[in-house]
Length: 222
Ligand code: PMT
Image (cartoon, rainbow, N blue to C red; front, side, top):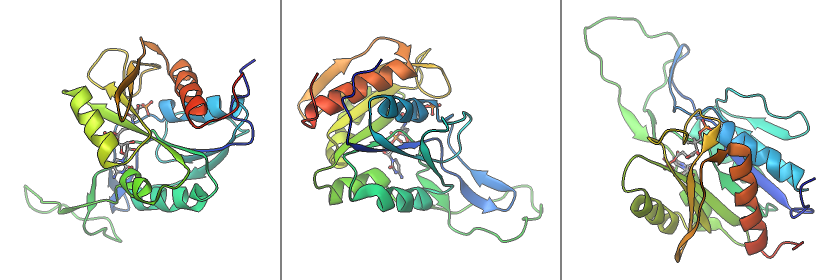
């Protein structure tokens, strides 16, 4: 049995890729299966928390005993997180949010015409950055999916998005990042490296991460 470090706490987790529509049959998305986020939601539940899982496009089935809010776009994900933000204790952004969306979404299927076509994209809302700006007592955890200069970029994101912890994964490593059942992560705070974890199942990564969060937010120790 897991130690009940999160009893009485509300944990909001985002998982999966957002879907940014081009037209009714096409969209832009990211390469996330949702496994990491779902593992965190499950571990938080097992540690006694009230959990809300905000899920974009995911390939795994979330446990039935967890409240799931399904969303598509980055904007919908932001709205759903905000609805649960005020009374949340820990917010964890494991989702792969599209950074850009089509400027226009067509109501009807777009017809093929020329040999090339140009899609105009505009930035989506940066959910984590906005949460960092309105943060009060919430303990905010971001993920950084990197392919190079992992420490540099992850620590930059931590500062810019005002997070308490940033979980870095090198998505080019075997056994880490998108789709795999395992992950290899480094956890950073403002001062530097908190923990470098070996290759672990996403469930074990989730448990280790939540244990650090529970301790740091002044949760129950046992
Ligand atoms: O789902 P899996 O297949 O299990 O894969 C897990 C994972 C690789 C998706 C996960 O471990 C991970 O790294 N998630 C974050 C992916 C990502 O979008 O990273 P990023 O470096 O682009 O973004 C940094 C942080 O800002 C993330 O917490 C992201 O959720 C957040 N963000 C990014 C853009 C945006 N518009 N809004 C955001 O909130």
